[in-house]
Length: 203
Image (cartoon, rainbow, N blue to C red; front, side, top):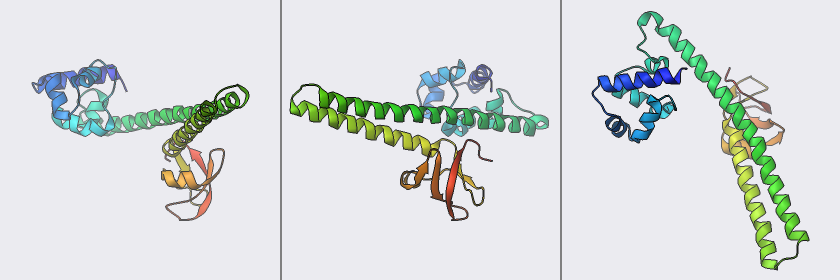
């Protein structure tokens, strides 16, 4: 998707409706700075606000994602193209999140052992020693929580039994046995437990 083209289209539609950036922002419950970022191509409207934005500008979501009013002749073709582009962008975002998960996990673990090492081998007051160890465990637990959250939301898990791909609950991910990116969980479709692998695409 061409963010510059989409931004110019948003600006054109806003002016056509006789709205200033501030007025459009007030309708959507956001700041005029966000509208300015859209119109200059520096950011895209969040998916949660797209329908409201399109209603305010009297265009379709497909028009918005194309950066122009789409004629009926090309509607289905452009819709399919935009859906594929959004799927591709989600897969790329999920890849980055999974890389971040590894970084967070390693950083939290290294920090914990570093602070324990400092507390064990450097001369200091007992209260400071316990504080360093406590801080290490707090950072480690926070890192584990963030890594698990990423593991839950990035991509999908595929059931080995029926092939269903889904996003599990945080509790299911947290409680499941795992080996690398495989987790032993119950499939919400066939209700069978199996070692389910992480995949990036829905189908």
